[in-house]
Image 1: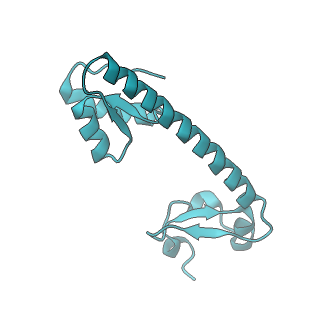
Image 2: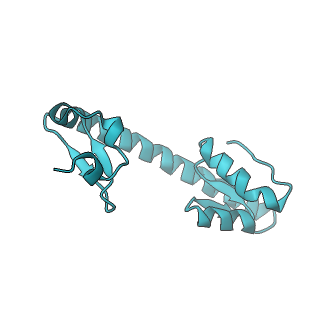
Length: 127
């Protein structure tokens, strides 16, 4: 667990964003930290006051980190299944952005997955 010390309320947003860029799974902090996390759709545990609150917030943060770790493992296993499927698989989200483009789909379309993932399907496979 890494700590980021915030000694100026005007630096909270930059520090919170830095923490998540550096791999933080959850932020633990005060009301301002919570507001910044909500604005950026990031998980946050708000510390109210007192040692019991700090202990509870730390335990909750550890629980969230463990849940995210398990989710990453499940995601990795799912990706392995998709990658080794014998059929071309392309999946898009509700915004029509490509989220899955397996190696067989690459072979069929002759398009590298890095060129399509995250982009709208209409932009990459117009037909």
